[in-house]
Amino acid sequence: MHEFPSVKARKLLAVLQREPLAFEIVRQKGSHRRMKSRNGYGVLTFSWHDGATIPPGLVEKTLVEDVGLDREKALELL
Image (cartoon, rainbow, N blue to C red; front, side, top):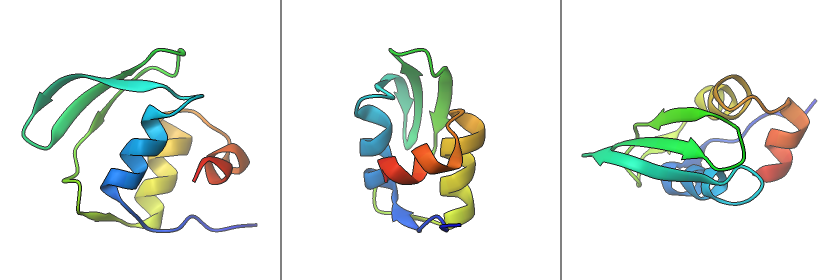
């Protein structure tokens, strides 16, 4: 079983904005971005500054629990 890496917030944001997830920012206040997927993955709040390093557990939580991907698909997108 592969482990999730820690990533910079700007990289995770780029993953969320690419297909197939296609999240777009619908509202922003400071570093808090409210995002909605054009492809039915729902709505989420992305609250990290671009240069922040997101630990592996939060990367996994964001992609698997918040977005709804399975672990393998989430790792593939990274």
